[in-house]
Length: 88
Image (cartoon, rainbow, N blue to C red):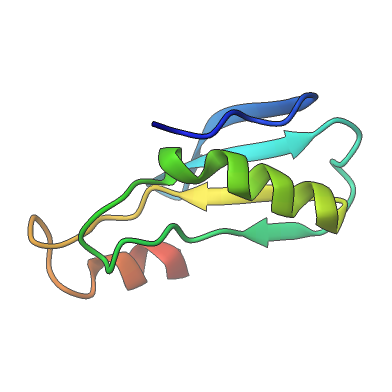
């Protein structure tokens, strides 16, 4: 089960040059820094969706937004696919 998002946070699905991602923006934080949050899971488990609440809190503390890419993982993809996705 995912943790609830903090109040006043918007989540938008975006495309980062072919890599699906989430853009998480606490109210009033559009002009601050960008946090690139890579979800855990040893490159095999987990999704960015399961990390939205944590990314929202990090963005809020930083006074900016967070981007959470939905990078490809093994075993369905080559071992370094996620690195290519994140570099994009």
